[in-house]
Every structure is written in C-alpha cells, then in structure tokens.
Image 1 (cartoon, rainbow, N blue to C red):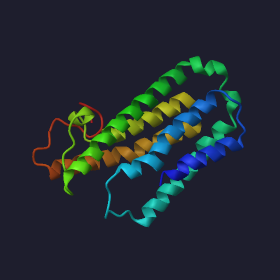
Image 2 (image 1 turned 60 degrees about the horizontal axis):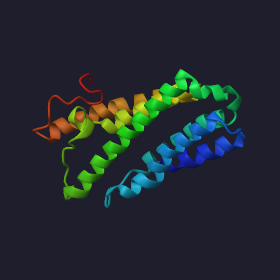
Image 3 (image 1 turned 90 degrees about the horizontal axis):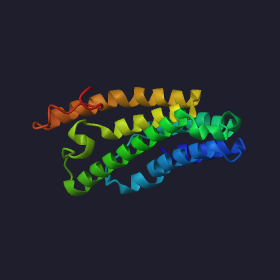
Image 4 (image 1 turned 30 degrees about the horizontal axis):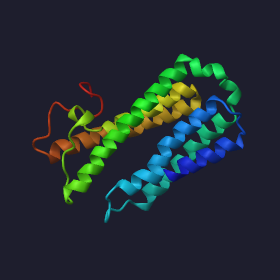
Length: 200
C-alpha cells in the first residue's frame, strides 16, 4: 500500500523540475519514511497466513497516490517559496526536529512489535519498554509527530491536510487498539494511555 507514496511522490516532484535547494530535503525525508514503509518494513514482519482485504489495500494505495500527488507536485513546482534562508527559518528547524523525533519513535516501536512477533510463537504478547511503558500506540504517536513536523517544515496546505488526515485516522485507531489491549491482557497496565503519555 505504501509503494505508490514513494514512487508517486518522486515522479510528481520531478515533473516540477525543482532546482537544488530546500525542497530536496523534503524529498529526502518523504523517501526515508516511505521507502522504509513500502520496501523494508513489510519484509521484516512475520505475517505468514495473515490476509488483508483487497479493498483495504486498494483504498490505501489510492490515498497514498493522491497524497503523494498533492505534496510532491506542490513541492516540485514551488522551489521559489523556499529560498535558502528557509534552512534557518524556525518553522523548518522545528518541523524537521519533530519529523525526526517521530521517525525515531516509529522505528523503535516497530522494532518492539517485530521482536514480539518473532519471539511470540503465534500468539499475542503485550509490548513492553520504550514508550510502551506509557502508551499503547507509540507507532501512531511517531507517525503523527512526523507528519505534523512535515506540515510545519513545509508550511503548506498539502502538508497541513496530510497532518490532519493522519491525526483523524490514527487517533481513533489508537483508542481501539488501547481498548483491545485492555480486554485481551488482564494484567495490562492501567496507567498506560492510548496515544499521549499521561494525557490520552
């Protein structure tokens, strides 16, 4: 589902013939996330025998293609909105910092879940360590931080729309996962929140 986001963004970005500058940093960040999501992460999972409905895959691919078009086409054609001074702009610095923080959280959470599957012997086990000490879904928190950082760093309508969509998509999913953990594991820590430590 994530492959169209990596390939589509690259194509739509290059169509704009952007000059070398700030927008290429945005290309790099996007590709780091989606090359990992589309080409590395799926092969690290142990999902033999598990199926995903074709409709879910098609909808995911469609969304990723549309999203990569909106962001890639905008950034590829908008290099003049990001002069070299943008590298020192607080929006760029804060946004890149949030993106990198979110990416680190996401990768750490993924490692924890992948290790659980590898050690699990087929059943479900409770994730422990890292941000899992305080929240049920650090992977979702990481993703939200990434794309909120993206919206700030790009200071663009497509970036903002993507950040809003990410929150609207992952917030209810985090709540559902948190509820499932609480029902599945009788010893699930009650102090854990769904998505934001000590808050929600």
